[in-house]
Length: 502
Image (cartoon, rainbow, N blue to C red; front, side, top):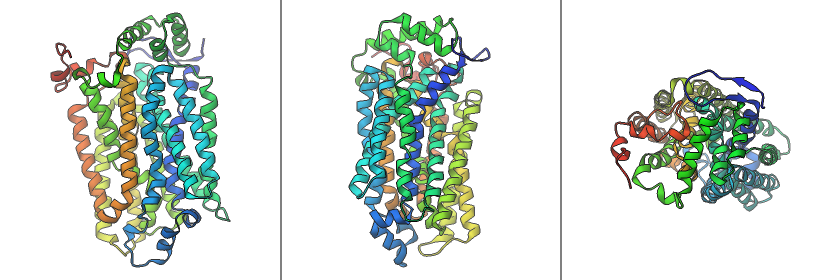
């Protein structure tokens, strides 16, 4: 029996403990999220390093050094530079649909293993890159890895969790992502100082370390009881897996729910078609809205291009990377806060508080940059540090709300019969929006200038209203009983009421 600590009563009729076996399994799985965060952070850092720009993007390097007439907002405007960043997400978008088939047919483990192998190959290519083509091919392979792991890891964490702590454990995905982002910024800050100008190679290849942990660990991970029951008829083995994960022999209630859900799941031959029917309309809307809104918070502006943004404000190379490091520390810290409180205060409360903070900060940054920066000026130190403080506060708001909850909500609302298809749609929408924003942001910054922050701030206001009106609370509800929240909701009950069949 696995060793663990007991959890209190209430919040769920299921028995169990948070065992060391469960914790270790989730830590290995979370390496997929760590790598995703690292990839986001490392690309923004290396694209602000002068040796990297000089080797692969000489036009931008010369423009930054020599062109004094070009607008502050347009110095880094390059479709080739944005392709280096966004190619990962286009590849992830395509891979996520193949990953859905693997995750459904073979389980969560094979998807994580495939992702780990792809990460290793991509990291090796990027670290050894001698031309732009090797860089982009390496990013594409990293994107394939992200497509597989982002499909499997949120489902894995959600299905392995006890209902009353599902929010905390599933939010580990965003926390691991934040730690990966922080690690990338720490490494970027250190490698930028290496003499000889080859430090960016270390930044790009270092992702091979967590990729190795994920690849080797996936060989020994247990698959989730939900996935095992869905794919086999061996209920005795499923019982043993569930008992080991939960640290108790009394798992019959949970096992019965899994078996019932599995019977429904096996009757569905085309989940991608079935998810379009009326009874699954709320889940389909959330599968699209959650990742769409998560990207439209503007967080990828900070994730990809914060070093470039801070250089636009007049900060030097080292100061820009240090400022980015500070924002990533803030993001990781506040995500940890969300992990600790999400199962107590609920999802909706954190969404609304975080949305209010992000909206206020976006408006503040936009006002300062519009009034003080202009096309050819530099911000004073006081104004630059005020912008930095607002960006940190914005990241804090994201860290307690759309950061972790944008992944948590989709991972817990889908019934088993459409779970893999629903997660695939979520990941695909996330990657599509990330690709579009990543590919267009530098051009948007050049044309919108300070207005870019008002643009994203408006979306934050809209998505906060959406949550207030249309997202029911999901805390402490068993994952295989989640359909009840829609039948009890003031709006969705009109669509998925008990008598609505299709």
